[in-house]
Amino acid sequence: MLKSSDKARTTQFPFQLTDAEWRQRLTDEQYYVLRQHGTERAGTCALNYEKRPGTFSCAGCGQPLFVGGKKFESGTGWPSFNDPLPGAVGTSEDRSFFMTRTEVHCSNCGGHLGHVFPDGPPPTGLRYCINGVAMDFKPDEA
Image (cartoon, rainbow, N blue to C red):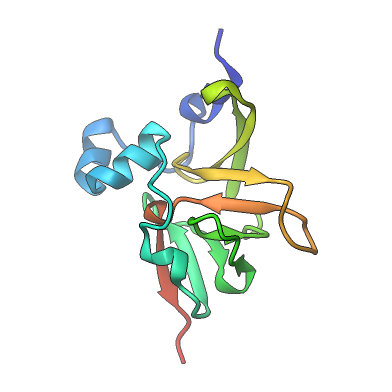
């Protein structure tokens, strides 16, 4: 029987690659986070400090996930957003490390992005705490 935390790992997603293709496409750190459900060290990714208007996309498949206007400084050391783009992410229960959290994954490729917590700012009250290495950023054109 599958644990609920394995749901994103076994679901069929529209964008699929073999493990060898993922390893070729991603850096070692991206592979660890996106495909092995890892976490980057807090404060280590430049995207945590990105303040320009633009779009944050999945580093695995390129699907747009969040826009800069939904990003806020949470003080956690990871990029935080209060709302994803419609249909961009999925969630599943994560029971690792002796706790229950809500995991966030890309709805297109299933890549692990981070977790969502109910302690964010209005209007959603949510904090999508996302690994910066799991995303790319494209600034809006001037």
